[in-house]
Amino acid sequence: MMSELLFECYQVPKVSFGIDGLYSFYHNKNVFPTSGLIVSSGYHCTHLLPLLDGRLDGKNCKRINIGGFQGVTYLHRLMQLKYPGHLSAVTLSRMEEILHEHCYIPDDYIEELKKWRCPDYYEQNVHKMQLPFSSKLLGTAVTSEEKQERRQQQLKRLQELNARRREEKLQQDQERLERLLCVQELLEDGHLDQFHKALVELNMDSAEELQSYIHKLNAAVEQGRQRTPEPLGGEQEDMEGIMESDPLYSEDQVEAEKTAPSVQAMFNIAEYHQMYLGTERIRVPEVIFQPSLIGEDQAGLAETMKHMLDQYPQEIQQRLVQNVFLTGGNVMYPGIKTRMEKELLMMRPFGSTFHVSVAENPVLDAWHGASDWALQNWEVDEGWITRKEYEEMGGEYLKENAASNRHVAIRLPKPLPRTAVASSSQEMESAPQTSSGTVPP
Image (tube, rainbow, N blue to C red; front, side, top):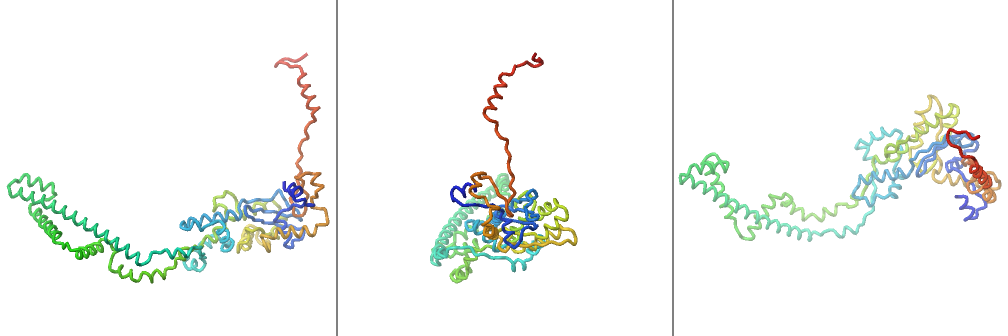
């Protein structure tokens, strides 16, 4: 499909296909033929490419479905759960920028997590990021005069509410006092049976208890009636009642209202629009070594590398680990080289040697390598598919080069000619039909 597009639409004279990881390997001064193990981690997946004597060993290549995209989405979910109030600011593009600029790969993931439990270590290593916000929103804040007016309205409503509550309470006390006086009259009139029955209903034991309760209730009713009805006095009592019932309305708060503008000036609204990046700095890049962190049921980079090396004899294993090359945009985390060296140290036999290198520019070295190869081999036909070969071989034809895949020809059975198909069908129709169990003469 790509060859057809290039030759038919763009009229290119010739084209060559290759693997990005091998081109990056070629650009970083690795002269062919040579052997090595290429780890190419891109946006959607990671490939482990064994190279033996300058040729790709395709049957032992491994692929891990973890790349930069999985890290970005993982960080996106983490920050959305951590800061639900800033969902609109937690975008994939911003998370990708944070991933490349603030994350790193530790030598030991578990030990690094233990360090983050220390408050001092957290304060020293946490990254604070300022989210964009509009300063115009500050101009819409409520002024002190408006706050005072709203406060007066709230006080007025509370005064009316307290007045209604006092009236209701006074009415209830009067009704209860009248009922108790009626019970006392039963005792004075000599109706003892009815009096004792009324005491049981009132949950009282004796006439003395009834008399004491009547005295207290009568004092409460008189106190309620004696409250001054003047507006000023009523307002003062309402204020006292409000301050007693609601601790938010106090004299200290009135004094605080006077200094509110200065306190508001000291508050920095920008602090609310900040994100703190702590353990996320190591949790997100770790998915390439532990895909189980995001629920992927597959092996990580180190485990897959060990499984691939086990497919070779010890001699070839040693040749491969002597040139472990990391390339691709997903290997740009600080500390990945040290981590790979530690993983190789754990999986290799005691006393063996290995070497790990990282591409100079993991993102663009593949393009630079393809450019170098094209400029050096422009005059030769080896590795190039010309337009004539495309027209003769078709769009699926691949010409091999040092950085390409192996060409595997697909051999399909040729269809029978129409004459042969017609003759075979006629022979089947002319053949005698026999029933089961009989033999034709």
